[in-house]
Length: 255
Image (cartoon, rainbow, N blue to C red; front, side, top):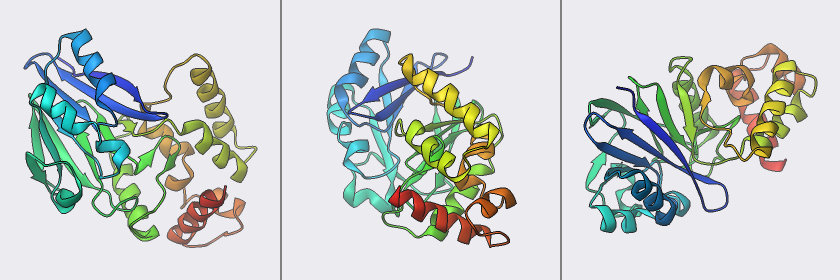
């Protein structure tokens, strides 16, 4: 029986993600920007929260976790390296660890760059990847604690997942990220088509996430730094992909 995925808008533009395994009555939330909308969804569906998986330490991803734990008894799981700046953890994990969530194996992937201890969670059997503020819809997170080389390597690691993997990121930033991508390549047909779809989704009140990894590979500039057309578009024909990535990320910071 497949897992059920629920997207929960929180704060101004955050998402929390509920994953429910009906076969074992296991329910997980990935990131906890605020407790109330998550609890509302749980109660409306009659689900009991069992795990809270945290991607990184920023307040807009963790501040609801203590209330959720108090209300549900859920286990809080996060990076061992960040245990000192996360809510008290029931279980501290390292990149490469494998969690059991119901019948699912969940791979813990280290994706430093946005923060030094950032994690992603890959539900391989169901084709879901929860990437927080690393790989985002049509973009990537700002590099606060890491280096461009670290973020580049993190995105390359996520890009190795299967094409059909659905990317579940931490924010609804797709339109802004798309405007930036189009500023680099304004006549790119795939970018224009994606923008039209994203605008229609938001106009209808729908989230633009999750999104297939294949679409990110085809349109996300941070996953296309080896594409000669993109390198040429930013005046870096023949440059090393890391140099192209670094230039594109710097341009986005000023966008």
